[in-house]
Image (cartoon, rainbow, N blue to C red; front, side, top):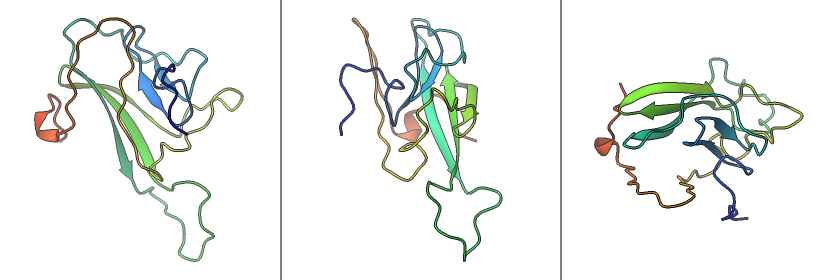
Length: 136
């Protein structure tokens, strides 16, 4: 099923986002998100990324197949070329509200999305050489 065009990223299943109006982070969360960073300002250059790594204790070879991805997933946010914050994708889920992280943990293709209300100008840069923030 495609992502609903009337929903901001982070509000629907299989999505995460940092919203510029309040700086809150959303992971499949329609209930208001979680405090994260300060709101975006005009002229800010922002980015969000994910780093996938093998967990420190991978499953044994003869173990049954995992029911979800076995990757460790760190999500990070950058502003004006500096890493400003991040979180472990699998932490801080509220079992009574959050919808889980299915589709975000490396088992499926991931796509970038930008959601806006009103007149906003922006550029996207998916080539690492064009990023203001550079991984070390």
